[in-house]
Length: 256
Image (cartoon, rainbow, N blue to C red; front, side, top):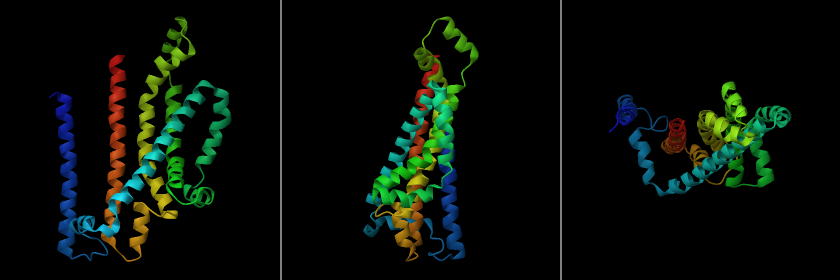
């Protein structure tokens, strides 16, 4: 195993040990101070809810995962495409970028009731809310990456009579990849928040909907378990983005 591989394994081991220590400490403190379950359930009581069929954990998790992934993928696609358009056309950037900045200032919670009126209940409005929250960081960071090109490289391509497409494909896009993935990592986190905001406002399925339902009966273990599952979904999406970043950015650096 290479030195980088050993370092990665060690880092992962440290992360797992720290998380496990926090869980053990949580269990010990709850037992030691006899904390009521409706205030803070122990990890064992929280995990025990997974054995109950009434919560429909699998189906609700799948619904929320589809909303998160759908909003994130749509946000990544639109954000990157718009950034490319802004890069190719400064006039379009001058006209539309301030508009997107203004639209991003709209509280996304306020969009929920409007989306329900326009698109009714279901997964699609929640995907749109997740998209509306996560796409702007991807747009801004990608646009910045595409615009920050070394002047010497520009002069080199022009001296070789390279076309605008060659400049974009060989210089701007590879140089912007770290910025693209930086925005996507932020977007992955925001997509989770967006999906849950949609489910809190009005939904018939999903982990956010389940949390609202069990809140009325003070079923705190189920609420905590829903939060844990949401965290796992977010970590999974974030890990996928990290994996893609390592694949494409490292590959790009090696090619250079």
